[in-house]
Image (cartoon, rainbow, N blue to C red):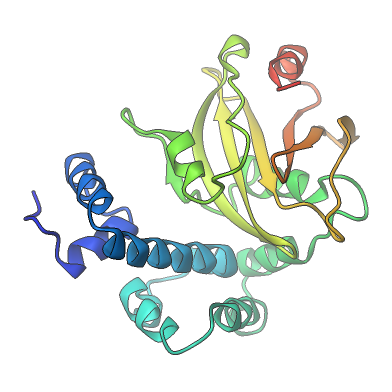
Length: 251
C-alpha cells in the first residue's frame, strides 16, 4: 500500500492505471481535498489520453524508452500538446510503417462526412473482429466501464444497458478522429458474440446525426446524437440478438 500523501511517483502510477484498487481509492480521496494536485493529475491524464489516441497501433511495438510516460510528460511541459499529437501520428505513418500503425493512421483520417459513422464500423472491424488494436481498458471483477469512459467524456450519454440482450461491457479503446478523441466500448455475451458502443465528437462543421441505421457488409450501425456527441451501436447483421439490442438503445 502506498504512503500518504502520495509521492509524484505514486501520482504517475495513478495516471497510468498501475495502482491496485485500494491504493486508487486512497488517491481519489486525497485528490478531493487537494485541488492543485488534482488539477495537475487531470493535466497528466489529458496528456496520456492524447498520446493513446495519437500513437494508436504504435503501442503494440516493442518497449521504447523514449515512450516512457514520465519522460513524455516532462517533454510535454516544453511543447504544445497539439504539436506532440501531430508529430506522433506522423511517426506512426512514416517512421513505423507497420500494418497496425498504418491502420491506426487510416482511422485518424476517416471522416464521417461520407457515410454516417464510418469510423465506428472501421473501429469494430479493427478491434472487435480482427484484434489489430489492443484495448486500453479491460473490465475486471471490480471494474467499472462507465467510470473509465467518464474520465474522457464527462458530458456523454450513459453506456447503454444491454443486459436484457445478454451483453456486458468487457473492454474500451481510445481513438482519434479529425474532430477530436473518440472511444469504443466492446460488449460480449456468454457465447463470445461482440457488439460495440462508439462515441465521437460531431462531424465536420459540427454535424450531428438524426436517429438512423445502415448496413456495411456484414455489419449494422445504429446511430444517434445527444449531449454534444455522436453515437453508434455496431453489431453483426446476423446477430441473433440484433432486435433486442436495438430495443435496448436510448430513445
